[in-house]
Image (cartoon, rainbow, N blue to C red):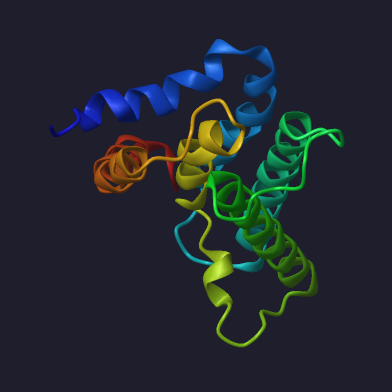
Length: 167
């Protein structure tokens, strides 16, 4: 039976607004998405700093929720389950965020990492995976498929909807 991906996507967007602790984590990501969509699409060091901040913010929030979900009294993590996906994604986002922030402040990218300056759509992915990373929803293939399926329509709406507000 095929899931209704629209319903799954709406659930990913709606879930953080049902709990105030999730909203404080995702609110700055929405602000960053709006700010990034209003700036130039051209990659530069300022946008790398924006990417770095967004990634570090999201990663710090996810570490908080991870530590809250897995207190010291719980057994060590089972690296075969979905919590390994959470921890891997968190570490990857934190590493890329730190690299983007440092690259933006130094005004120099490491070789093959200039993509860190393209910040406009990275917040979309941080926002959509946020409920799963914050342990409000579990990681499923249906949710991942919904994120991918609605990536281009969301980009089109943001790109053309906010075009009049860009220089």
